[in-house]
Image (cartoon, rainbow, N blue to C red):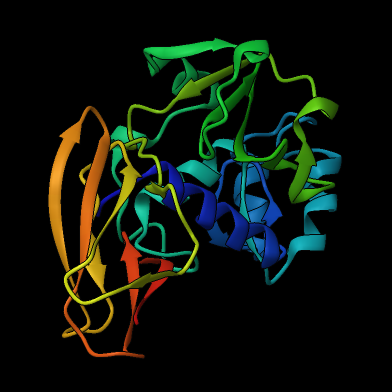
Length: 248
């Protein structure tokens, strides 16, 4: 299973949209009375799963539940949201929110957070996932469940990159404008990507796509017209459609 920051963001979005609940000590289980009793016995403190939280937890009966760091563990243990998290259990990832933060080697004060969706967030005893554009998804607590919040509205103290996942950046193309090519005419565009991007043409026999040269993370390509007038082909970068090349 390839685990990336982009995959973590999509997983968290699915968890939030599904109305996932919160029970301390869980990471993707279905909430039952027996699960609430088990967690209350194992974590009896009032601010964990015992005391009043045992009663509040009943609001999540029948729902998938997790605690804050359980959201990350749930992602690590499964291929997709909704899978049985115990089938892919790995003790390597079974740690506390503070433990996950302490394992990270790349981290910083929240004031220095980079604009990278999938960056992890830390405050003492709590974990969240930054999903971009100032938004966060977190398993906030028994009263709240998995919710979307604003980064600026919560007392996060640090960001960190989890060593469990790979941080990749989506490829970007310097044009989304359709282009017209005469037979044999070349058109150059630039792709910037942390990884070597996959660039394909959606329809063969219209244009030929030829690599030109690399400069750092910038990949330059030729499009050369080979089709007949009015033919067109979509150009895709890492599976995302960027523009249409038309013959004239």
